[in-house]
Length: 198
Length: 197
Image (cartoon, rainbow over all chains, first blue to last red; front, top):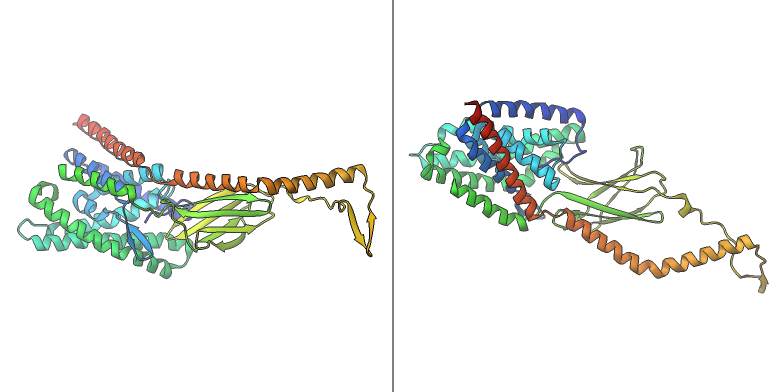
């Protein structure tokens, strides 16, 4: 899910950076001070999650956890994911500094939008509805992120369909796993600490 | 909140054994041959990955794929630096630069044959000038030297490869350090926010 340095053309990199920058500004402006510890925890969870690989057939895919972050943090997802990606690029050379914008945008936008759509279905009385909508956020975030990454690659590689197919194929199983993780965490949080979710 | 901190710690434990997609490559030169290897951050080989070779000026020289062990080799007489790009798909890419081909390595002088040569069944002594003699001896000695030190250099090269692989692996202290950075930066943001209030 992390695009490396030197793959994309400069125009895509610039566009990605600008989009991410606006997301970052929005996220930091609407930041509620009491939410900050929570954001820090999710930020570091995101940072670590990319190191966990689940072997799927010949390849493996890693957790992203962007769905749950978007669902619980809203626009603060942008700074949370940006910081995680920045440190991944600096410490492990995952992705890269120039592709930071594109990667942030691709991983942060889908969960933010999906979070807005599905947040109203999270209700304490309806556990199954909560689980299903959380599952969908986790699942669809990965799928849409993969599609956005595919778009970014398309403008440079000019072979959209095969790229999208491999990306979706590689991320479909992980999307299901993420869906379940998101569902269980949200349901659990709703029981023990509802103020984080609602 | 406690649950989450526990979750992160739990995830960090996994991360130690986790694999990553991050691809690395390493190559070295032996005469006009370039030998290299491509591998993922956990050290597993990049099998059948596309390897593109570019010249100093950015023109593509050739394209090959790695074998089952993630190794590749090719011949080039490009004088400038050459850039090796390993493409693992889905936006994963690794680059490595190898020094150009030195002319001194090419200029194997067309020295005269040493000693004797057979012509029409008779053994004829070839008279060599002092200069020709020097060239011939130099060549013979360097050949012999190469043969003797080959096993040793091979060992050193393998060791270098191992060290390079180990350096590219994800380290636990980097993970913990990263988590520390994240909390620190959000802490600073929190302080700034509280000051505004």
